[in-house]
Image 1 (cartoon, rainbow, N blue to C red):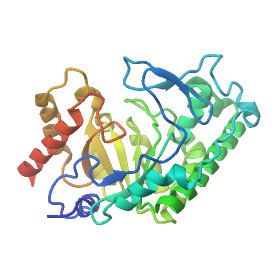
Image 2 (cartoon, rainbow, N blue to C red):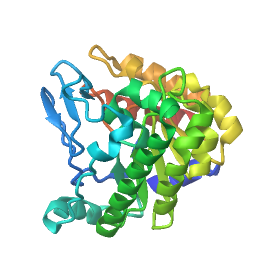
Image 3 (cartoon, rainbow, N blue to C red):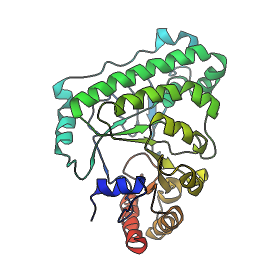
Length: 325
């Protein structure tokens, strides 16, 4: 029986996996990193960038407040006066839990994985609001280029600390690039504004010990896959069925792999059932195949919003492995 890592590599290289890669099993995520982002359900809280988030008790997640009182950046042309990158905490005490976790990981079995988010695109709209961020790309491209470069440099500075402290060999990066039906920006605009930033970031990680880059965007982004490959992404996590996954595998398999196919909104809800989990898992595994595809809930962490769903999906994937392998 292959190890989790071996099975993952056979899957994404088109080799001979002996089972489906089961969701996030190959990534041992080190979540104890001191990022300055610690959301608390049922509260409003301010992150290290000064963004105020609201997470109501009856919602599954939080989102920034962008009314006039709370919006951090109201005029993109004045970003240098307003946007201040957080100080990166490098104390041994702050990183002790993360270091201990990193040192406990069996590298023969799993990847020692660091996580970073929000990503570059998300940072623009978290500070400004979605409408202002998108309009800024059209109306003030020079200022947006400068702001994106500022975020990029902060990511690179943080990456240096992550690598020095934890010696990871995989990165799990968050940046949602679309809705369920289209990307938020056109491919041309993505290429101009965001591709250069990610080539710098992912290139730095790959040059400093990172063997595997997994990027989360639970969205439509099929039109951006060539750029994902160019920037050095190995696995796109969160791929929804609206992307025509079989066609993506046919066209790009061997250059990038696709992790998802199990839309969380259709599986992970208050009245979820085992039967519904099984139906969706069977459909995905039979439709998308054994190579360049990892069945997984589209949500961006190894968890579910409602108790038991993630575990149920995991068990159903195991069952399909016994059927199809």
